[in-house]
Every structure is written in structure tokens, then in C-alpha cells.
Length: 474
Image (tube, rainbow, N blue to C red; front, side, top):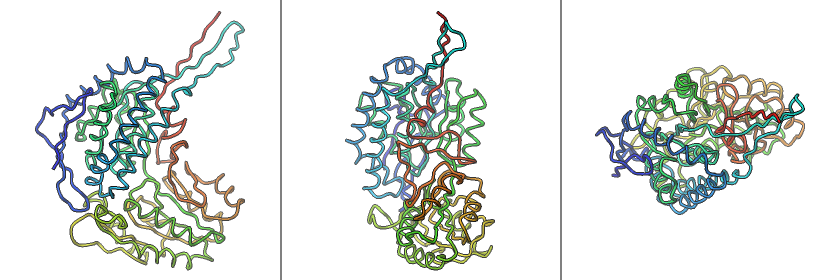
């Protein structure tokens, strides 16, 4: 069993409190680590260290910061196996998937390093002839990064890299379900020579997180998490009028037109729904099928969902791994039971497994209605409800009849249908003839309750800046 220390001001520091957070392997339920529960005083020290470091870090040229990021990315790549081993133990992912996540994190770090010479301001025409208006992009200061459990390595760098290249410093609070990989990332930062205080990593309880997020020096709080977590962050932001950047819940609709490649669509949807046991913000959460191909497509989904086996991916990477904890397992099963009580039919799955591990089978539900909880609420698990529609207008109306608007999917061979959906879907993303994958040069941002702001690309990088207008008379 491993024991970690918090990473504060460039050093691993013995915790001030004996309080510990226990970390379990969700596939075996074995205790794999105990990490420190940082105190409020330590959280404040971390913010102060970040604020002090930012005074120098923010004054470096962007190309100097980029060189630090490139060395950090190289260290992440060199340590991908160690990061992956930690992530495998805490998340139930296969070692290959976990190590690859570290490598993808290195790639998004390199990508943001490339923005060094592209962080641009504007020259704006003035109404006065002897005057120039300059709009400059400046760092915000200290950023609090709140990291989820599902892709904790990639998401950490997805937030930290753009924050750093734009001149901010960060305090990271990893998920208490998956904190050990974050400490491995801190080791890579230390090996890369990242200046002290620029990156701080602390595990903590919710009360301490409140002290972190309401510190006056924290200018931006970035979160990937649930809608309720987003509401909590907005409360934190109110204290000092900090800027929020929130990627929240999702309920990705997949619209399957009659002219679609049904075999390909079924394979793609099942892969999306069963990757990491469906614990992805953009995983397929509801399927709308044109009525003339409904029965045929449902049969394809059933065949492919029934073939998915569950188990420990550390032993066999062909298996679908576990949910994050016992609470998630109970909640998902209860949602399936309520769906059946409301009239849905279980085509495959739907049984609570016995034995160790927080597993749940790939579950396909037919006969669903738009008003059912299973269609309206995020499951964050391997549950796929299927509904019929008559025409594309009805499909769009059903897809848009929702509180969430993060991602969406369409399968069709008609460019007219694709353009109609692209112009009318109420979501931040549309994927045509493929499932979501969040390209890091794009912009991952939700509509409605799916969030404020966003990640990735130029626009995600600019989330970490504020503007200064310089009005110069001559």
C-alpha cells in the first residue's frame, strides 16, 4: 500500500494532520493507498505559494513558459508507465489504457506549449484620430483545478497546461477516488524542473476545498464534474467574484437515420457506452432510432451489448471494468429498476453482479419514453435506453428536449440531414458518423446545464486569460 505526501511549493511535504483519505481499487475493493487530507492552513499555504510564484511565472515570456511545458511533457512521457500503474490501481483501467492516458496528457501539454507565439491581443480603431486602442491578454493569477475521477490524468493536464502557458499558476485538487496518479504527475513536474509554486497538488475533504476555492488570490476555478458540483463552485466564485469554467453533466443523444450504416453505428455506440464502464461525460446516453430500422438496429445493439464481459481489466483488457464505487453501482441499478417499473424492457444486462468489485453489466433498455428518468437523467454507467422516432424533425425535438447539451451524435449518409441537425441541435458538439472523442484542438463546451466556458483549443486556452484595454493618446 502506498502513502503519498502533498505537493506544495515544489516539494513533497509531510502532512500537518494525521487525517488520511483511503483509496480503493474499484475492481478488487482492496485498499491500495492512504493519502493525506490537507488542512485548511495547507490549502491556504498552497494558494499563497502559487500567488508568489505567479509574480515571476507570469512575467516570463510565453516562449520561456512553453519550454518548461515541453520539458514537463517529456517527463510525463518518460513516466507514463509509473503514472499508468497508479491510475490502474485506483481506477480499474487496464495498464495500457492508463499509460496511454498519461501519453495523451503529455500530448495536450505539448499542444498548449505551441500557443506560446499565438496568444494574441487586438488593435481596435478609435473614434478619436490621435488615439490607439490596444486590447491585451493577461493571466488571471491563481487557478484552482478540480479534477474528476474518470479521466484524472488527461483532465488534469487539459486544465493545467493552458493555465500555465497563459501565465497562471495552479493548485490542483484531484478526486479522492483517484489521487495517486496526480502525485505521480507532481513527481514528473518536479523532475522537469517546473519552478516551485507553479503547480501544487493537494488531496482534501470538501470543507478544505471550500477554503481553497474561496481564497481571495484564486481568480478562476475550473471544474469537470456534476451539475451539483458546478452549483457548489458557483457559490465559491460568489465570495470573491472568481471566474468559473465548468464542464458539467451530459446526456449525449445518438440519432440513427434509416440510411445509416447500422452495423458500424451499433459497434460505435456500444464501444462508447462500455468504455470505462460508461463513465464519460460524452458517452452515448440515449439512442433515437428511425422507426423503419428500429427493430433491426435494436437487435444489433443487443447482440453487441450482450457480448460485453465484465471483470478486472488489470487481468484482461478485453473486459469492461468497474464503476468508481459501490454508491455508483447501487444508484445505477436503482435507475434501471425504476425504468423497468415505468415500462421499459431489459433486452440484456440489468442484473446486479455478486462478488468483489463495483461492476455492472452492459444494459440495453427498449420501450423507453422521453419522460422517463432513464432518458432525462445522466446515468454515467453502461446503460443504453432506446426510443423510436418518425422523422428527423421529431428526432431533433426529442434530442433537444433536455436539460443537458454537451455532445450529440448523428448517423446518416445524407448531407442534407447532417446540415439540418448541425444547424439545429442544442449541444456544444455534434459528431457525424462517429462517437465523441474531444479533439484537443477543438473546443469542448456545453450548452444549458452542461456548463459554462469550456476546454481545449484556442478558446479553451483563452478561458485562462483576462483582458486589459490600453487607450493611448498621442
